[in-house]
Amino acid sequence: MTDKLDRLEEIARERWGEKWAIEQKHWADGTTTEHAYHVVSPADIDDIDQDVREYEYLWVNEEGEYVVERVQLTTKKAIDREVVADPYDHVDEDQIKWLWVKDENDRWHRVTDVEEHEEGDKRTLVCGDVLEDDEIDEMATYDPSDQDYQSVELCPVCAASRP
Ligand SMILES: [Zn+2]
Image (tube, rainbow, N blue to C red):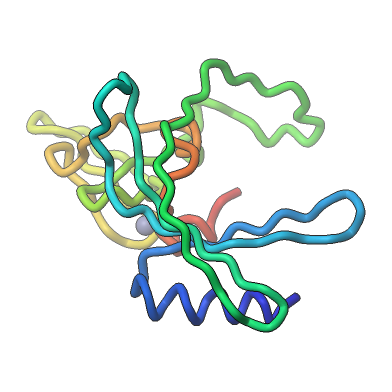
């Protein structure tokens, strides 16, 4: 299975540079399925009154042969969200550790510190960058997957630091 992941990574990098992610599902029967994807762009489709994003999906078989598919999807948004089990007391919604913001390249980062200024807040990110309010084009969220589940691109450094 590692071979398949390596192969996905290799083709993804050739085709899309550094803008891609791999999704792998581990099924209850012990098998896995996996694909890589890349967000092409938001798409404007007549007759569809929803946000649409265009993706490329990359699949490989056991022989390492691949297929790339282009797909247009409406974005999925969470309509409700609630913690239903937290036996280890991990969730404190007031804590900044849950805060994520999107930068001008549509990539989400985790925030470690917010400094309030009159001109706008200054956010220090886990990866070391600093974002000021006028560089942020979307609201902060406690979970980036709320926003736009399929197209979420996380900064790898910030993603690795998730609690
Ligand atoms: Zn980051």
